[in-house]
Image 1 (cartoon, rainbow, N blue to C red):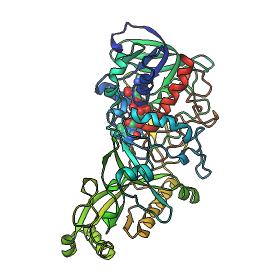
Image 2: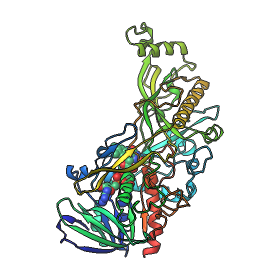
Image 3: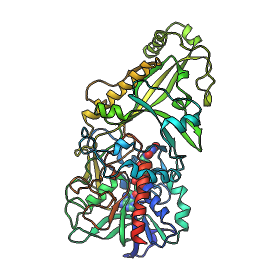
Image 4: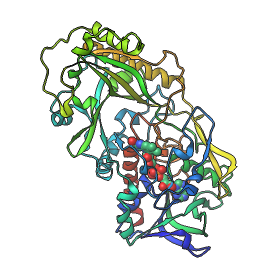
Length: 520
Ligand SMILES: Cc1cc2nc3c(=O)[nH]c(=O)nc-3n(C[C@H](O)[C@H](O)[C@H](O)COP(=O)(O)OP(=O)(O)OC[C@H]3O[C@@H](n4cnc5c(N)ncnc54)[C@H](O)[C@@H]3O)c2cc1C
């Protein structure tokens, strides 16, 4: 059932088994999983079914660190949350991402990738992606019908992204929520405070407001905070009436360790004189095995361990294709970039193979292509950094709540690590005789100004065995609080270089199983 909280009588008290704060990817996944059970659920959503500017304004905030998107445009505040905008790129974290790596301070999840695998498998249909297969060898090589690049030095390998259609969780799963007799979804209902007992050891209720409507309370046996990684931290910090530092913040960890995936759309130019050596999965989106896939390059675990590096992923985008006809022309005199590419292709010499292999899917490479100029785009792992954090501003929103302030900080090691892996890509492609990679990154630890995020907010309520190192435990329960759980990428201990949503959906499914046993 979906109802509008603006029509509730003032000071209503709703009693339920499970209160979920936020109807985005995480909150909807949990409510949907438990739909039709005997567990009474209240799914509390700040927005309506469509975008509304007044509600979106509640997401305003400040940026205090390096440049970041304005906070009100980096996420969406209505039913379905940020999945109303997401791009659908999916790839699980890799096993090494979960490990405590002695070269990355604060790394090490309390769970392994193997423990999450069954939930990743279940997250595939939730995100409407294909089989739980991401390694290039075996399944995808067979499905694509072509070999992936055989990198000879063992530094780089191929992975696959899968693309969700992208699933708009609010639209796609609205009917299930609407029909479920045990689910009461409240729209235009903003949780303004998580209230605890004096000891701060148990949540006693939620205070909820509507922008144009009543204030009311919700009491539950268990609570899940699923409002997105910036807002999860904000709400815990705002709930400071009983515990002055905020709920779950005994060790001053809430809001710290904010991570993104630094993105650089053109981190290098790759000029190849053998475009046919890259099968079409590297250069195009292919529709295969009931999903859409794209191959990408990643460092091997061997390289990461040996050189003590952080993870990264590189995609190949074709900027231009050169034919014999193009190359017979004089080098362009007035375009330095085009001239360089042109000269490089000439330097690289004639193709080593005669004849043209059969065109791949989508006709890659185009007939007559003797060379291609490509952009390598990257997203990379940011090491957890306690100074990269979410705090509160003095300014307040329309409900009188302090805004979030984001201080996103990258470190030198993040940059140096990315640069080394980029050079490894160059070494491997050079060793294969495929072309040249020209990095657009400097060799020092300074980040270029134009680094973007990926709208991937992670780490602000990190998971750790010890309350001194993390906000939640391995079951996503807030340390020291009996009945409060957190869902979403705020619980990520490290962020790897994989887009976060499939992992947070897998974690939400795992949390659902944990709570199902307690509440049934
Ligand atoms: C432009 C864009 C592109 C993206 N592309 C990708 C991609 O390709 N791949 C990928 O993996 N990820 C991508 N993401 C990130 C992805 O959207 C998020 O990882 C995902 O939506 C997070 O799910 P969530 O449930 O934790 O939070 P959200 O989806 O943000 O949902 C949080 C919900 O909580 C509600 N809420 C907030 N505060 C309160 C409150 N106080 N009371 C009640 N309700 C509240 C909000 O209204 C919202 O509906 C992208 C994001 C954006 C913005």
